[in-house]
Each structure stands twice: as structure tokens, then as C-alpha cells.
Amino acid sequence: MSGPELILPDWPAPPGVRAAFTLRTGGVSRPPFDTFNVAAHVQDDSRAVAENRARLRASLELPAEPAWLEQVHGNRAVDLDRQTSLDSLGPADAVVTRDPGKVCVIQVADCMPVLFAAADGSAVGAAHAGWRGLAGGVLEAAVRAMNTPPARLLAWMGPAIGQAHFEVGEEVRAAFLQADAGAAAAFAANARGRWQSDLEFLARRRLGALGVTRIYGGGWCTYADPRKFFSYRRDGRCGRMAALIWRAGN
View 1 (cartoon, rainbow, N blue to C red):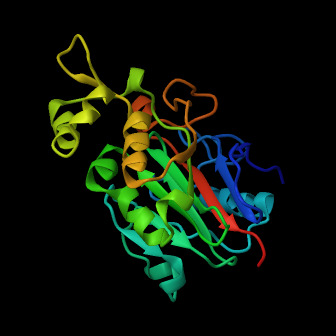
View 2 (cartoon, rainbow, N blue to C red):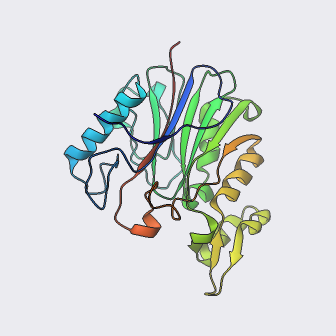
């Protein structure tokens, strides 16, 4: 059984913290979900999704099945340590844990996945930061749920759609400028009277405002690299990639 291709975050994570981001290859899903789709909500064959998830768990030697969320572009954060079952998490777009037996995961295909780790390795988390989630405060919710001083957090930003390919309307720009006039620097006017939005800039700005200064990753564009990445904006019907983080051992 082959495993998925992965990006392993290049960041100074504390000992015992593990993280990975899956690419679109190394699985069994057929087009347009080819091949390593981990999402159960995109109308892929459920058997293929189950096999891909099994390969993911085996390849990374995960301590448990990841806590797959029902992501809704909102700002609710789930603390896995307070849940009795992974089947009743409810809609959420951020997740945290201190338990080495639990795995945080976010699914994306253009939105920004942000992984978090306490500098002492005591807690980890993940957030699904598309424009709606960013404007709605999902990173703020994730940082609160980490229950760690922001200055003692590390953040890693995974692959997301780049500014050159992320066209948005005035309502998106207004949603950010309403709370932060400095967010205007993330929007470049285009010839169609709309805006090219820099999701990475917006995420970095939000994190910085929270006091999270140790930020790593970024620089990938999911839209621009169809060999490696799924992109909903580029393809419409497509699979999802996973950003995972967990604590290994005690």
C-alpha cells in the first residue's frame, strides 16, 4: 500500500509535535477527485475516501483517527479534550487538543490551513481560514481555545490560493476594512472592477494583531499548481487536502 505525498512543515516545532499536509497524489480516488481525496462530503466514492484515510493514518502512524470536522466557514473552535465522541463535534472550523491520543485536522482546497503549537509542546490546534472565516474571527477563536499566551504560540500557514488567482468582490474587501483599515493592503484592484485578495497577508495580519509573531510557512498557491494541489476555485468539483497536527507520546 503506497502512502500520500506530503508537505512536512518547516518550522521549529517543539519536541513531540508532529504535523503534515497532504498533496493530491498517492491515493485511490478517481477523477475529478484523483487521487488522494480525504473529504467525505464532495461526492467521491466512500470506499475510496475510507481507503485514502486509512493510508493517511498508516503513513503518519497516527495515534487515532483524525477529528474530521463539519467545516462551515464559521468561527467555532472545538476542544477535543472536552468531547466524548468524534461523532458529535458539530459544525466547527478550528480544533485544539492537549491529548497525545487525539489528532487535529483541517480539510482545504484553496482556503488557508493554519496549524498552531504551544512553544512548550503542551497544546496543538488547527484552523480553517478562508476569507469568511478570517473575517469572522476563526483565528481569534483558535488562539483563545489554545489557552496559551499568544507570544508563546507558533503558527504555520499551509498552501492556499494566491492573490493572483483569488478574485473577490467589494463586499469581501469591506468585510475586512470594517474592522481593520490596514487590511486594504491585501487587496489589489483588477481590470474587471473587482479585487485580487491576498489571503496569506490577511492571515498574517490577524495573527500579528493577536500577538502571534512566530509565523512560518506560506508561499504556495493551490490554484497555480494542479499537479500537487486540489483547487475549488480552479476546478469546482474536486477533492480536499488535509492539514494535520498532533502530539506524539506523553
